[in-house]
Figure (tube, rainbow, N blue to C red):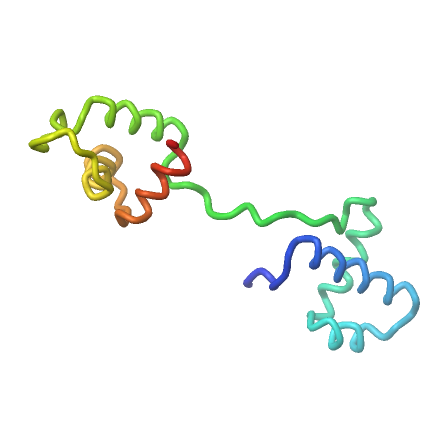
Length: 125
């Protein structure tokens, strides 16, 4: 099932409103139709609300799990510090395509060079 559209805060606000309407005695079918949710979600949200004040709290989506672990990133950084010639290239120029090949050789992972560019920028700085 896909994640609903909206910021975590908007989704939390929708859950809280649904529980409030249920507690006021509004028919679950009407609430579900108005909010665009399945009726079982309403009951799950009411139960979560009763579990404590944070039961309906907004939870940001964690995103995908990185394929390269922190330890592998450290290894990659050390491999890159060895220089491009140490990996068989004729000069010391590191390109995303070359780093992609180093990752493939050493970690047996296939990435698109543009993704490797993001890894270098955001995870290795």
